[in-house]
Image (cartoon, rainbow, N blue to C red; front, side, top):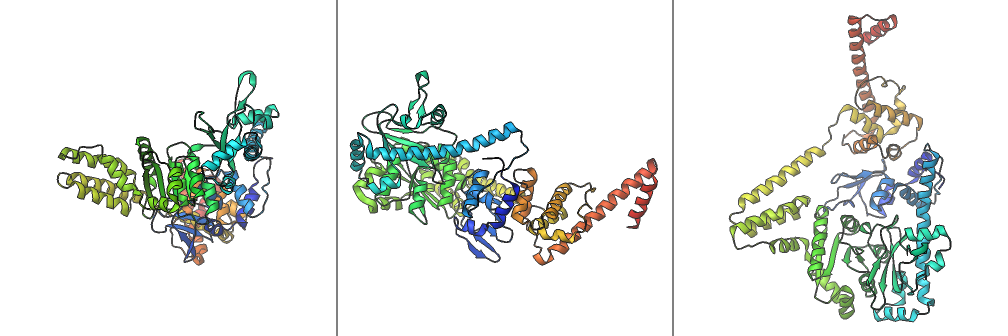
Length: 585
């Protein structure tokens, strides 16, 4: 990495990119008038409110408000950092991302370059280690023990290869002896959690005597490992720690493999362990993922619901399993809307997905998934199990117990159904509380809808028209005419005028990109979504009319300023001439 990505390259990339093609490859779009639409990938909904404009090269959801250009979509949908999104988009068009020097100090440039290069080196090294583990499964002296274990779990060579499963012998330096060739790489292995600092500065392997499961990110890059011990050692499963490239709360084991195995995923089942994911895939259930030893997080659930509309959490039926399910439900509440579902399966004591599918087969296991408990039923069962329902006080407490969870749930037919069930279930003595709940939710919804409305002012209209149709700048002979106008928002409009004048062929997506990461950028993306109902053929004349109204405001401001000065201290000759001209105008 030689420096920052040149602005001109980003403009060229956005000029070549087709946002409809890009989004359609991830979220199937349907033509709707001159735009395209789909159910929003960033929140759950039943009716499509996600709109993609080919003319603007811009997307906007009228439900949750998410919006942006092709780069923004990759950052949000694939959870990529800005440089990675540029790399991803450029690779789609076989473009190599150049770098340039920037205005940062040499020390800052060097630090940024090193950080970027370090991550690239990390991915390369982790991939090499993964291949090393796979090779060890074939050549290690005690490979037969590992192979017999995998065969004992009914895993075929094909599924072992598909998941990149490997092995490492129970030696202190099996991996370090191969990769720890110099102090720099040794430190890198420690930083990546592959080695543990030892006495006398002699790090040793973190994973020893274990079946190794590589953990891949959304782009298929190895970012960590899970190791299953052979024999009676502890812990049974050992996971990579958090590192600069691995954040377990944001990743899902097996998601990349599930996408590779299914052209169109319709549902995902969340299980607890690596072996569960692999065993299910072995028996035909190729849509399982694991939450990497944590309770299913909000970030993981967002990823799940962006991928499919049906998520089934499959846990043990014991107390720990039900507690994990409740934490998942609580994290999922803000994400659940009509058309999307979260369900739960609780397995019998002593069973896990691995043992169950090996015993009963794919058809029986999927039949269990089909009978999964809907989240609303689990919500009722869990909350009511903690309350004495044999008294009016208990029934009143039950309604109150539901309130914090219902407040997290977005407005939907599902939420209405839960409220109705509450009323029907508890009957007398709770009508007043139930009515209050409905009023509270109705007031919140009304307030949110009011807050979402953006008033169309002349300034906002001018900026919105310029964003949508940058070419209308050609109708304005002098872009400096508003520079002296004292009015909020005019500096931003002037910045746009200058940019459009400098780059006559600039499009909407490129304009927005120039302001990424700034307060002005946030304002512009909102104005790009302004519903002003000005037809494209009328955009230029409307824009000129608004600019003329600003000129009139300037004339009034300047005239009042000069008249006040004339009354207070008198005017110079040039100021008198200016005042005469303004009064004539």
